[in-house]
Image 1 (cartoon, one colour):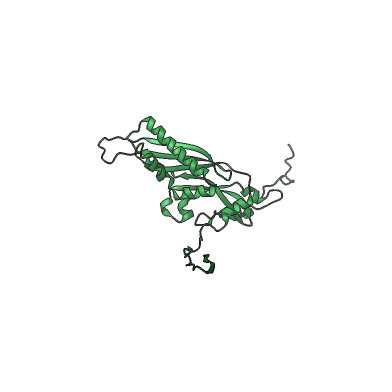
Image 2: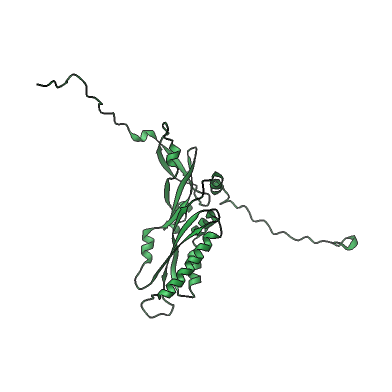
Length: 256
């Protein structure tokens, strides 16, 4: 028979299974200062080893958080905010706005029978060079004294309402930088504004900017990112008392 090589140990003996989590470390996620909560979570990554640097692996990660958690406001639970890791400082990951969405259940709760659905989207450029795509949704509603069961809008009216939506959204995005836009989106007043404008064409309800995507970002700039993280958002200080005009007495020479 053949020599079974019983004496020699097997080549490449089984490696000892090592826990992969021992090689990993946790990093804090720091949300921009426009949100109430700064530390919004943690993320994990394998420690820097050789040429594989941990911070490079973290950059570009996108986290999705509920606005209810970010702002401690339960009424905004249907809004989801996407934030992207732009920079790593120590064990802190600085996040920047990356997009916004609506939860599926909220969207489904709005869609009903016997009404028209009006949707519009627009690409707009903010003053600081971001290109964002905004999606809007609205529904027709019955008149106050309407007896008819349905409230479908004619396509011409739908088109003119859509034009109003596009107009409002592009003005909103184009008039300021991304920070101003995000503040307006968090406040959520744009939907009501569109409702008011479109009410002359056809009564609409439940108008929301349902989604926002950041399509293009300008070249990464640390100072611009730090503006998002400076604490100017929350503490505005006390209102200054209005200046009281001093009573001036006419002096000699008649000059006041």
